[in-house]
Image (tube, rainbow, N blue to C red; front, side, top):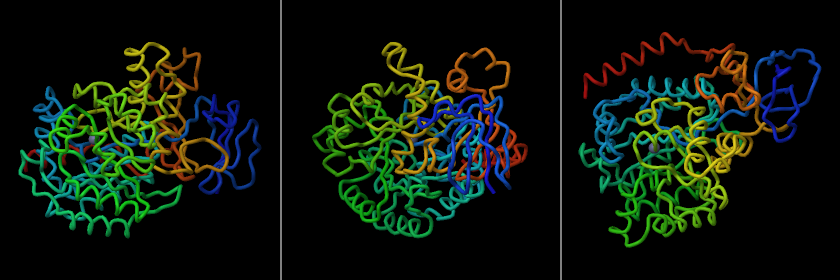
Length: 451
Ligand SMILES: [Zn+2]
């Protein structure tokens, strides 16, 4: 069965900016236009009062942190200390069941803000990790019908990583990490441009908890199997000072020397990028997951994204984990990205259209999901309908951008992923909000009881 979306206030499409209607057949967009007539067997969705956007692509999350919001000990700490006080204090206690509820909550928040693809940097691995913790993330995404790029974190030494060392977490050996990666790849990874499941090789930190031998082996493994690569880099200046101290070169030159720059690589944050780093990122096609809320919340700074965009660095947006960006909303990230670069660089620093492109097509490009991220005939049917028929949007003269301009609260009335309805009449399909709330509350109690 197909769907005909009719009478939208506006549709964000580079192919046909005046379109009001869209046809979905199978998992694809098959028509865009005005006054499209229904065909037999097709379900008609009345989109009057709605604007239609491509589904948003979140390029950096830590779903496990969805049950670690606003932990008092970390509220006024910088990144290094906060890692020890919040995520690394709790993560060895996260059971498969707690992970499942955290992932469900995080993905629910994604869907209700308009996300259709989520890259989760999942790094809960140590020597004695149960594979069921990772399986819980895949399962939650599967049940909610969202595209998942699971960025498989790893640390092969505690090194200078403040969270690892403080909690005496026993790292995986390189061989164990590679073995586990291989079994995940065989079980879950899909290479297609419209894959629902992608596996990404994603050591948690290039500088602090991976040695050169590990980085070489992980890069080699990823290239051999056509997997993309991801990590944190230059979130704060500690990466730079440690790279100089350990390797006698800048963090970006160290990444370069180890083969960790390229079109198949993207990094979260890159706040402390200098002009040389921006040049190397642009020349190699290495992308950024820009996470402005988390960078503000932890007082890390603001990544020079307009300079990166001018240089040609591929740009995506990310919510980062909810332990440092309690909202878990891509609308929040887009609104902040639009504003904060103007505060620093003037009103010409960003436009609404470029920010929405970073949050959709830009993210899809970074993840290598070539068939998603744009409302164009032939692309995968990943889209969201925001209900702007509400008082706070009624005075807006540019309705297409109302959810970005006015930000949260906004309502996704319908959401489609791969042609399937995942949000219907403002509710995430297959999920009871009351049950979710109680399960998350219980999970937090259990976590505090065991910490
Ligand atoms: Zn992160």
